[in-house]
Length: 313
Length: 282
Image (cartoon, rainbow over all chains, first blue to last red; front, side):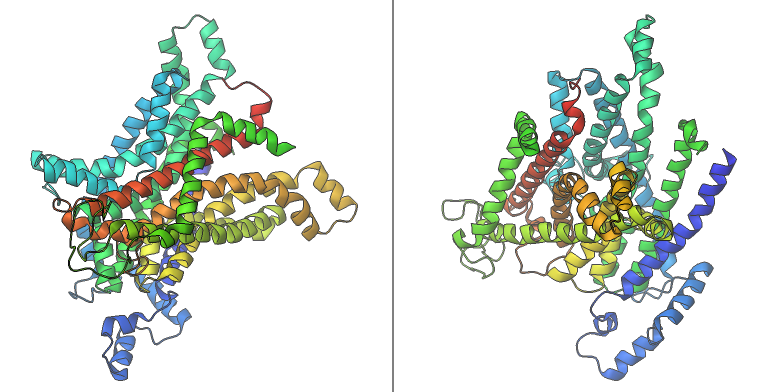
């Protein structure tokens, strides 16, 4: 167990480095000149050179990378071009809001998916199963930004039942929850659809296993068969798949935050891109990705706890 | 003929057939759409601003008086370009790297797989925003960005396949009679991955459609006034209460097309599944 953990933890480092490097190159290899975009179309050559020097873009790429990496290790991701505030601070202010949204959506989606998936698999081929299967496909095909707009339109604009946008305060207040409902649903429902399908097929797979037949022939009540044998064993592929979907969840959060003006990192990212505030873009991208890497790591550890076979690999 | 078995299985799945019908309709619309669109999708018409759906404008008009239906029809061709283009390139890169990694193993495999792990850890949208956002958008940029962000999925899949196929007897036999690596890959391994590739591609296309629409919605996609569906939806955002049709219809259509591809892809996957012919499905 410990060797697996140690190995997995060590793996974190090259992945984090790799991820940061990809972001670094992603920002620099894009066609188009960022300096030109910061300075505007009317700037003179000298102004362009000035900015280039300020941002350190006049050095060669390997040198830039080395400097950037050293700063990264120090936690210095540059200052926002717009406000001069260290980019890391701006992002740190928003982390909480994004986590609030993402975790709530995640829990929601998992709850719905487990409930729907397990019950549908148990009643395979029934009307209920068909409805759930279709529903899952339906929800996972839904573009989240459009869903958000439709929710907004129907539930917030037409019937002034829920607030249109923004965050209403801490999670433990009624206002906070009111503002969280629509964004969390928008982020969580498509994910629930995808996860439900995985849960259902996993449970179906487990149900056809020999040990389930054994349990039943021992005379165990169906309810006990399910809770004691089927559930735990079906969960393993679900955890794997859920971990694979985590990047998607954070990506979706970017869209949902933009649609609902939710003050998270995603919204900061899109706003910074429009303002050509590249240090902030970089910081937001890096920290978001860092969170995903850690979440994946946590999922892997959880996976090894749930499935002892993995630890022996 | 193997494809007759497949066709029969596919036809049995009603949802898959509906999905195929939707996909074919989408393709037809994408091809003839711009020719049958009643109005110009880009030119403003200041005398018909924000008009609700009517006989002249079945889907209404937007804030520049442009007919939403015409914009959507033109947008379907754009969507088809992006959808198929991205998946094609993503497939080429992913399949090539994946098969080579799986077949040759060793250092090449390690490098490619590390790269794949890294790429899969980064939220696609975040990376796409970083790349496309700092370069100003545009059709080619979007396609390249999306390929960069998604090739890893194909690669991982194909590597697994190549690993499996590499160990089979016929590969060993081919090597024994002196077949070169290139020959084995092209004539033996690749054809056996075709069905998997088709299924996966069919399921990647809806992702590509939704992703490009999302990028356009955020303003980082194809540049306005291109009638990409995401852009149209974004333009309707401020009119949710006064001109709901602008944001609603393109989204509905997008969802329908995505649903169609998903149903069809699911059906394809079940149809290609060899377990179908061996035992009854429970």
